[in-house]
Structure formats: C-alpha cells, structure tokens
Length: 84
Image (tube, rainbow, N blue to C red; front, top):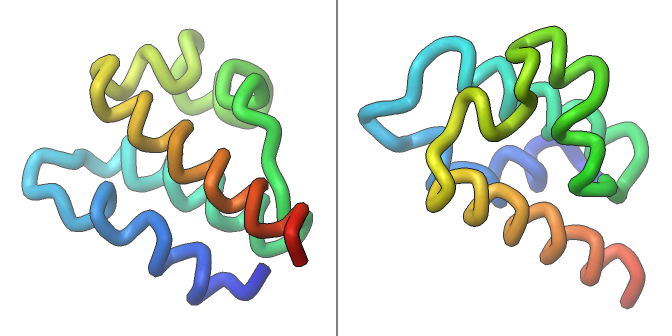
C-alpha cells in the first residue's frame, strides 16, 4: 500500500485536535507497517513495536471509541487488500 494512501485512510484520526505526539507516533507506525506489508493484523496493536510506545498497546493510548475506529480502519484496509 502506498504510504500516502495509508495516511489518507487515517487522516480523520490524525486530524483530531486532541491527539498527542505518542498517539501520532502509534498511528505512524501502523501506516509504515501497512505501506510495507499491505495488511495488518489488529492483534499486533498489543505487541512490539506498539507495546514499546505504550505497554498496553492501543488501549494504553486511545479510549475505546478511538481504538475501535482505528481497528475498523485497519479491517477496511485488509478487506480492500483481499479484494485486490
């Protein structure tokens, strides 16, 4: 996946006025992974390198609503990759 396409998908999350630098780093790590691998298993959000950013992974940085939105976006990317 093209890195700009991945950034476009996550633009809503990244454009939030309440997002902090650690959250941006977390999302950028997802985007970089997608740009290299094309798909992403949501369970990885609790493993390295994400657990290096926060030991609780996604749930340590985002509330349930935000985490759900991020996982939904990842699943959408995965479905699109499977259909390609």
